[in-house]
Length: 320
Image (cartoon, rainbow, N blue to C red; front, side, top):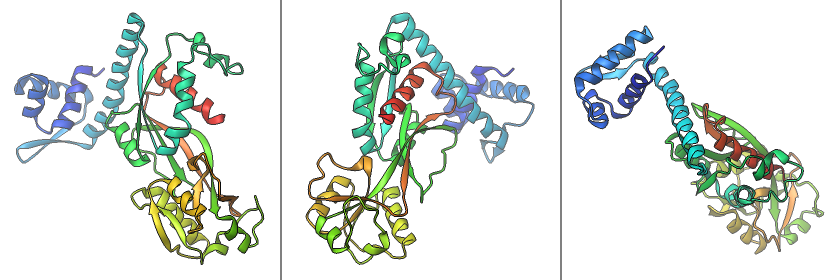
């Protein structure tokens, strides 16, 4: 059985890079760190470190052990936090990083659900009523961030949950050391001005063929919103043309405002639509496209009561 304190030393070495820096960070001596790392190698039975010039670097086995150490140490820290919360009667805190439309659509209802002491609106889900688990009402800390940034916050341990999305034409790889929890499918719609729809003979609510709109001016997500911009390019490419954008924006409500002005057409996920869609027509696509909305947690942490409670709440509000 490997010593947890030695695992912590190995992980700190992977962060700080040298024995000297690791020793300083942990207020130890260099020889003490070296002795403990040597003992850990003996426990592991395989080389964990190798010399590279005057420094040490992790072997493949060392890197793999650090990945496991991350999960083990995270779970131990979470256990300490949960026990402390139970002893003191405090609520656990869960930090959530979410892309803008999820932050706007999903997180306010989640906040209300967790804050509602009466459990109103949860008659059909008694296991989610706050009074059924009074110790597990986590307090939320919210950060709005595009999926790439949200995932980075999760990996840097600056968020406990990252809410991200992946388009069907643009799958996103599961980040190393993370677990994925599907929340919902968000359909992509074509937003057009009513006059444009009429010119194309497109009746209300009828599916739209993107190829019919190849010659229209396009309104597209800004390239800095990487996945949304690339999805529009790929969707149009699959329909046989390259879109010619006359405007780009990081906010879908800006794009729909230009649609309402008759400036062009845009592909918009349903969740990203503004509350007021006056002046635009929304059409499903003849070749349906969706983006999957999901939550990410670090490996092994979804079982923590405070995180599990938030995931349950997210599933409930997503289903609604």
